[in-house]
Image 1 (cartoon, rainbow, N blue to C red):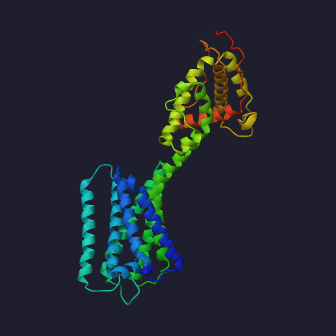
Image 2 (image 1 turned 180 degrees about the vertical axis):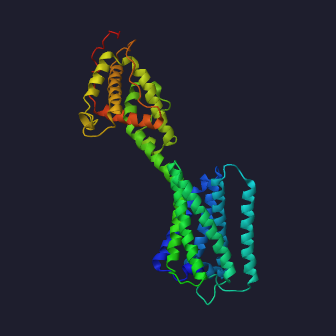
Length: 413
């Protein structure tokens, strides 16, 4: 093998093995998502080739193949070709990130260059005739001779330097957090690959450096590339958990409203736990349906929101102090958002609680009642946050209308 793994310490070998396992996990995890994006396919191919190269670089894998087929020399060659494929796939990713239009000519030339480098590697392999394992160091001279390794090292260093500059530049100026994280991880991953190949070049030129650095550089390289591959999945999982958490917090409010207004349901009711464990759709869709049904329930309950109820709601909202703590009940001591959000949320919570109690008590809806307090948000995330505050205050607020108390007949002027 390369001198990188000629005599690594046990820790270095363990780190490289761990990195390789993580890379394979990331490659398999990202496979279903590579069909719709060219850039995702290029990154996935780079990760797949790098995972294959690092797998073949492991001593345990080499020993297993040697016992089974007695062909370690072929393993070395395939490993180096996989490394070059990974490098050129990364170069295609750089091309697609830096060109605004599809410049097919440049892409074709990149692929021609990749074929030429691989063909040159194979030609030198045949030209040099029988030789030992592929090593930069470990004997009196590198095997195969230096030109073979110079071609490999120069290709990797050129690609790594270009990719590092592009990924760093794009990552620093990227507004999207997910894309920014992926680009910076790619930048640091290519930097670690650069460290590996710079050390290999130093060995080729006769400078003795710490060989133990090599497996750690490879381990960091594959771990960072694996992390970059899983960034979209990680962010999607985080968003899913956030949606489930928000849905769970709003559920008590939704349950009380649809109990009073079952006609707003867009699908049959299911238990809270069953909806989480066996959802009938993506969490984002379930959350959106929940918000739609709450909006519809607000419209149904609007005729039950009397002026007295609104007055009671504003009186309750005025009792919130500057820290926006909901007085009384289970909400005591829990901070809500700022007062600009907490007061409208408190008004809506009390109005909904009173209107629901009036409807369930059999009171007649009134014409000319005051408009129900509006949801204080224009976007889905803001609306979700607002209704979470409403749900929290709803649980802590006292019922302002007794279910059997008469409702005033006097309409507002």
